[in-house]
Picture 1 (cartoon, rainbow over the protein chains, first blue to last red):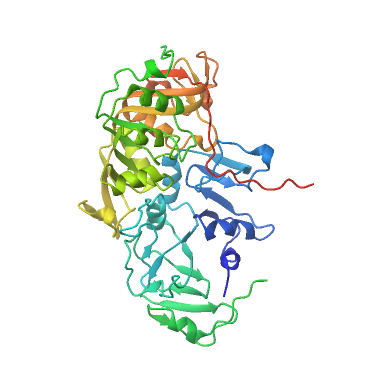
Picture 2 (cartoon, each protein chain N blue to C red; picture 1 turned 90 degrees about the vertical axis):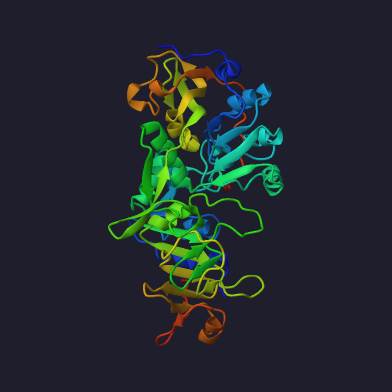
Length: 219
Length: 233
């Protein structure tokens, strides 16, 4: 099984030189720690910044510089600042190459639910609906099962949806899977020590397995 | 054209119960701290507040929630406020949650005189309920309407007596659009300078949108998530 950092590390391998990337809150934020040396990737923050840098040292902390998770951050050389309207114009306009976000559930058609649990606190969707409706490429970072062992890769989502037919790839603690346009989770890689049979047993949606499935390699 | 008023109390003149207000900021970054204090002191209530977030329990819009001056919140994310949660679950507060990009664009549209537009955000979700859906180039879009307000309260870094504004860092966020979308826009600034001081090339919000501007006082600029890394020795 992969831990959170393992998931982030594996997702980082999907990055390409020259990409503009939006990272969601949680595991996706960790992906920033694993951008390959020498690769030119610019991180977009929905609250109005292109070019997120590392967390500041104590002396650099600036209340006017935060990321979407409200954490203090820095800027890299070549950063730019803009309004929320401009930020979502670049998101909806398809200018961001890759969006990485978390999910509570994903369906075999690529539907995603990640903003609301009825009966519990509703915090709001923030920018998630805009991101999933428009991103050219969406990778979801998630746990394969809930804490009580139920599959989160489903035939149909049970929670209120964030977007439909949008997820292209999933990296879970157990596997890497493509979501096929015609429906179904295509198993690409399995976490070290996790069998295909086990993945099948905890994937409620249609799982497609072709040939030998290699283990995920993290350097 | 001189837009300067003495302070926040003067700047909110004309504020009435049940008005619709826009308040800039993302989290606590770039919020109009002085105007919120003045609204608090005014005791006026029944407001519909359009703001991306709802502050925290004891700062930002959380202050106006505590005093029950807000009747309805229109926001994209409200997860940092326990008093908010209590009022919502008790049915004391109305809440309309809107995708963040749609919220920003509805405000922008309000200021730009565009009554409605189509966006893909929310198609196939509960956000789409009751809204017109139309296909363009094989993809579905929702019709969303503009947002406008009686007052907009924005916060800028520097401003001049003519109402021109420059924001700083990610404190810009919703402030520029909100400045355009209200009957009366009140701008508070960390530094108020005479017209002619700011470089016209660098202005983010042209003074035409700003009715009243004042020099803000005692900015706390509270940080929600102070995250630091160790300096290399």
